[in-house]
Amino acid sequence: MLPIAEHVEIQAPLLSPGPPPPAVPAVLELEPHPLLDLRALEVSFPGPLGDSSASAELCAALALDAEVPMASSDEVRLKVRDLLRQGGFKPTGRSKPASEYLIKAATAGFLGPINAAVDVCNVVSLHSGLPISVVDLDRVTPPLRVAIADAGARYVFNAGGQEIDIGGLLCLHDAAGPCANAVKDSQRSKTDPNTTRCLYLFWGTAELEGRAEQAAAWARSLLEREVPGLVSRDL
Image (tube, rainbow, N blue to C red):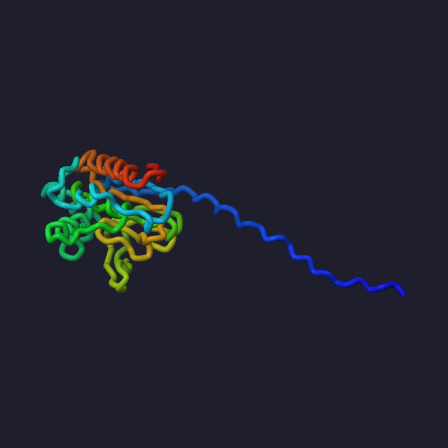
């Protein structure tokens, strides 16, 4: 009688998962608008934003009296509001442009550093007078487009669950709907300490020719200084 061979279980070797697939570059579509002069910048950071901190020079630029290349004015404020009124939105009171909130916070001494990526946004918005959105590209779903939000559209804009009515306001939309604008970005699209890819939107107006382009170029130079190794491209 032949001996019965013992059953031997052979485990397959564990394979390394390898590097993650490369991120797909963002594509942004713009619906026609009579005044919008939008500039968009995609930025990939060498590590999570939680690992970055602003330099003393950048923190100092969060003050209204900082010596910087741009300065806001009443003319800029009024032209930005005119831009946001085009679809029927009223950019006043609690719905005023984000750049005006920054001026108020800086005047009261409440504007402090968060991380290098957000601080650059705040510095450039504060002094240029243009609202700037910063969106985590890994928290939104393509296709991305900029268009006026439908009447009655709303979204949550903070961790407390508060909502803003954005009907008639120029917004960034993803597959799930509006997610960012010149007043308040949605909570679902905001950056966090784990963010590694951002989309910066500079909400400029044709009535302030060249201002959005200047703000975007300044922001890029600050980002490259603050976070060595990042990769950026215009959309």
